Length: 194
Image 1 (cartoon, rainbow, N blue to C red):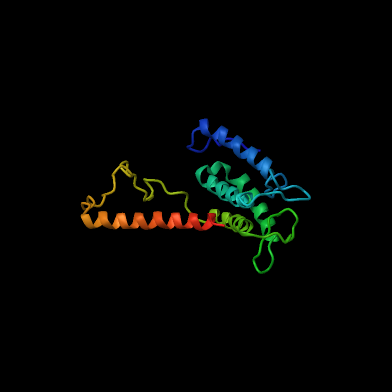
Image 2: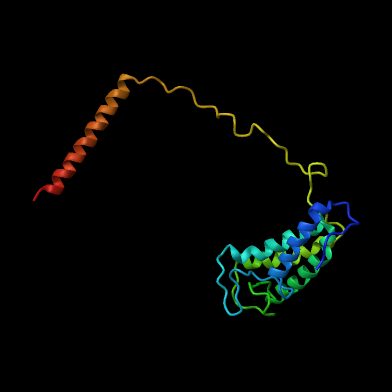
């Protein structure tokens, strides 16, 4: 399909395995240009669990991000994303309700949150080609996450020591204990009487 681009600044050490991984991903999950969840989507039936119904969307987003991080892979990835997004769009009703099977060219009646998220992600992944869309932020390009090595190491402040036990506390505990024992014995007597 494609291989490393010697014109980029990326190291060939990473280009070759990355190109192989993307080639295999596109061959396996996009066999006819439209993504298929190979583990559970069969020609006549869908056996996917709730999680698997959203996996197509994740794949679309990750591949779109890959085009930003490794531009030498953009052409074949975008070709697959475009044809797959077209399949996703055909699986939707005019009201925006989308289904799971994108290879049928029609709405199959099986909809849910995972199917909706995947179809939306497929369509949104095409926006990665817009000039206003930049790659993921890093520490040097505007990422704002700051590490805190000491997070979780500080014990929370505990309330002060409990007040001392008074004679009133002891009397109250004795009365409560006596009442509970008497209630228990009365209940046992009531259940065992003829």
